[in-house]
Image 1 (tube, rainbow, N blue to C red):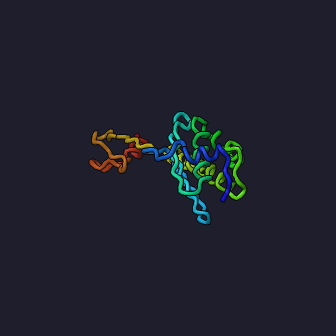
Image 2: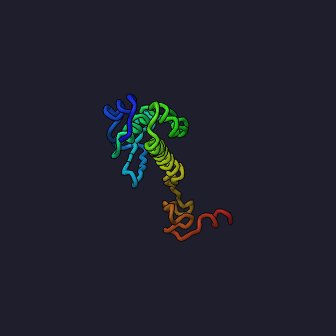
Image 3: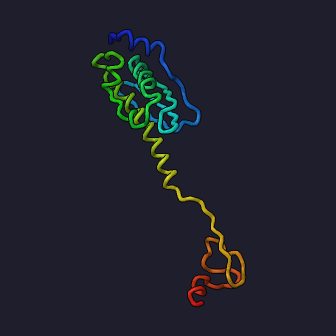
Length: 168
């Protein structure tokens, strides 16, 4: 059985930021099926900062302590700062982990990074989404409204409006 230091035990026995965020901006999941550790991080972003970070972890004491520490470290950071969190920085902040538990610190940082990547991916899709601008056209000859899908053809007088304009 691994021996944990006082700080790891504190985060294991009194984990901070446990739970889910309703309507999170990003979700990241990481796990190691060999050891059974599974971590899910939920983030809320405001002005490019991690306004809230919560987690749910199924695993050993080190996995829970790592998740707790990652959530504390990341809260308030910019997204770029949080992406720079490393397994080593998490383990250092916990004042060390037993060698056979260092992989847990990998999972915590990776799950947080996944949540940020998930958020950024959603943001990019919003940017790439075509804007729903409904343009209306009216036929200059019969004054009927021309549907965007039909433009430049007037369904009322069957005129190609652009061709007719170029002939004028």
